[in-house]
Image (cartoon, rainbow, N blue to C red; front, side, top):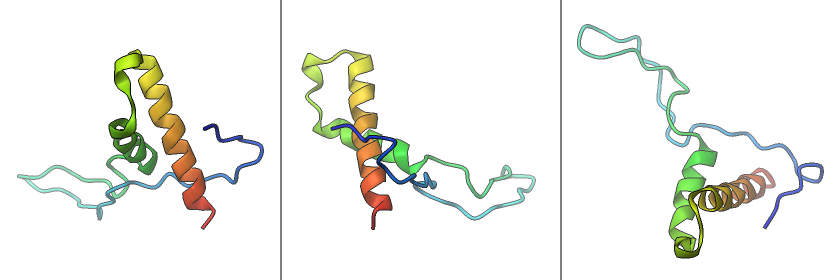
Length: 79
């Protein structure tokens, strides 16, 4: 499964778990509003469960996970 960049609409890679900004205090650090894992990274992590990793090396696993994530991001942007 390959997403063709010239045929695909560009997707927006929002944070998977967005948080409101927090200025911090003496006990808690500053939190930026866009901090955290991206949607693409979240989808890639979830895709790992579906992969047959016994026959793949680390690079192949990562490439496959991100190909799936890119396809999910593309599909998400179409709706």
